[in-house]
Length: 73
Image (cartoon, rainbow, N blue to C red; front, side):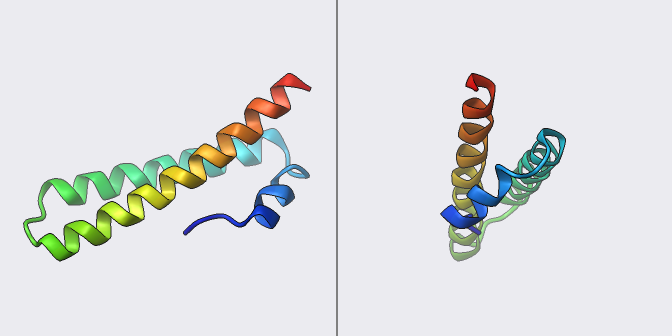
């Protein structure tokens, strides 16, 4: 679920509240994945969950960087 550069660019035209809503939703999704990992023993499933959580983390980093740049302007 990695956001493309084009998608990140499109967020520049959205309201700050919309961006924060998306950030919060991604954080909640990542937290849910972490909860699933706690109860999982299957290594293959754990690897898939971890990969997904890392991808979400990359998207969060991109969006938070966008918000940081918006604050500087």
